[in-house]
Length: 161
Image 1 (cartoon, rainbow, N blue to C red):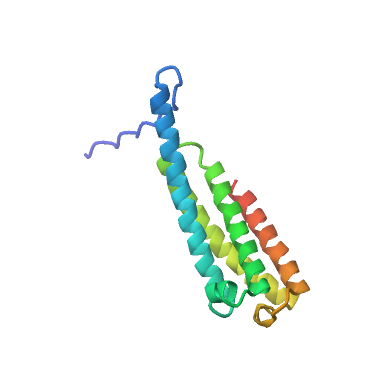
Image 2 (image 1 turned 60 degrees about the vertical axis):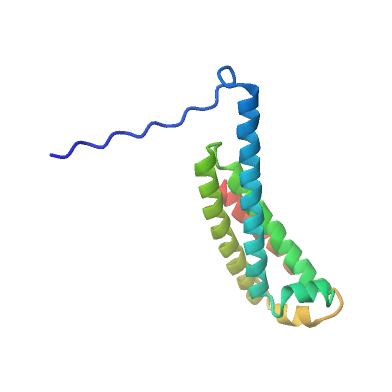
């Protein structure tokens, strides 16, 4: 007979009376730094996913061509990703390792859902992102899609919580 597995002890919450201020600040600073790095990584991933969804090289469309439609669609997509990442951090419950893992998983799932939702809405609304990005002036359809992208991000973020 093999021995039964021992239960894993749950981490105890930080007790302000037994932990020094320096240790408390150190843990908090480490958590902020870790979440910030993860958040930036997820935003970079989000940027490249948006780049795949929008026709053309996104960095060139924004930086060189100064295309307002590509810029607004990218900005709204990244704002949506930021909402999802922030909600993932909020729902992490304070345990750093588990919180980082949950944030990474929920962030990546959120980026995927955001992208699928964005493409689906664009198709249902009958607004061609390809045509919008080809226009040199800001288009009404771009404004509609930008708000929709943020709304989808907000919906996804609340689902995480």
